[in-house]
Image (cartoon, rainbow, N blue to C red):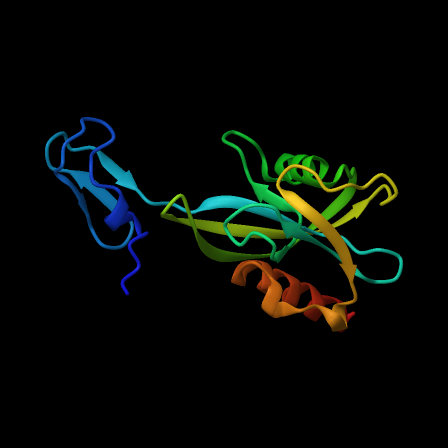
Length: 179
């Protein structure tokens, strides 16, 4: 069955003039034949935080909503318009877990795509290793339903919500194995 969530299958009308002459080039751009409006399908930016407790276990969350409700994830989310990546990371971790980030270091980025509201959203997910003030006031809120600390050797990678998050975790594990 053909995936009907790709931009060329979903976006049919020019957002500027409403014309049906909104033509997709098949890869990343639309152009309206009526008004000339040019629209690019770009990646949205998202952040993901890797946090580790004193036993070396990685903090993973459970997604409360679709896409992939109930699956494991890293704390994080989309960067808002006109927000820095750094501020987004701090905001998302506070919103989801009530944790205060003390420091962070960029780890890696990976492309991703997922379907939301019947539309494929392309993202670039940026992973950060974060240190927090402490985990004692942590609680699940916002768009996560639960959290758990999992030893790196016991991570059920088949339960991770997306390839990009799986790759960020694997990149972290490769990085700490080198040290």
